[in-house]
Length: 338
Image (cartoon, rainbow, N blue to C red; front, side):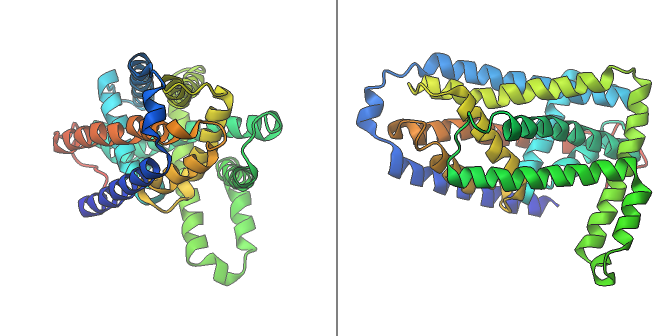
């Protein structure tokens, strides 16, 4: 597993640096930048504060979740676990390492094996609920007010529909597992092997773990699940809010709603990009999306600033946190995620 992470990290960082060099070469106008009279210090500080707030909120969410599952993790430990599993997400294709990494680390920090997997699935599901609300709002209410451009609009339509279908299938497997299994039984025999069979097995496992985790959450009171969702909402508001703050710091007066909405679309598409951290693809996609919104002289600087806060810093902090978590002692013996 360690060699895969190192390979993913190398690929991710290399592609990101290559994309950064291309952006600097194609977009940065040094003369224009000198005349901007950048107010970077204050806005960069505000963006850093928003990043710390986001990390703190997610640390609190993990702490609340683990307390409901039967163990007590402090707020700071929750922050380190968030950084560690985000590091795993950034160095694995399509972010597939996030949930297994969190389940492993929760198990290492005191949760039993089944409970740790349930907690990781519950956290992922609450995030999907928040994203589904964002998809619903953008698709039905803000579609005429937010301009994405023809290419991005088509991408958003496809990704949003695919996201909605997968969410409905996951929810159906949780609520009506026998009904979904009956539907799968109607598939041709060759479809019931290979990828479809593995997908169905994954759905069944997630549904079982989600149901088990939900029973534990109910014991913590009716408002606990609501608190977890609210923490996730504020986290993503702080996370996406960094982009218009950085744009303002670079002297670009843009519509914050357009910036945040467009970045939400890209974030929604990230899991479908088969490159660790979506490196290279994300930078170039942002350049194409914001070309008509952000002045060309600072477009590259804005993208690099955004990636510095949401990628490079997280990689560094996540790597340190992951090493500390992996070298630390297990709080329980016996069951451990393989």
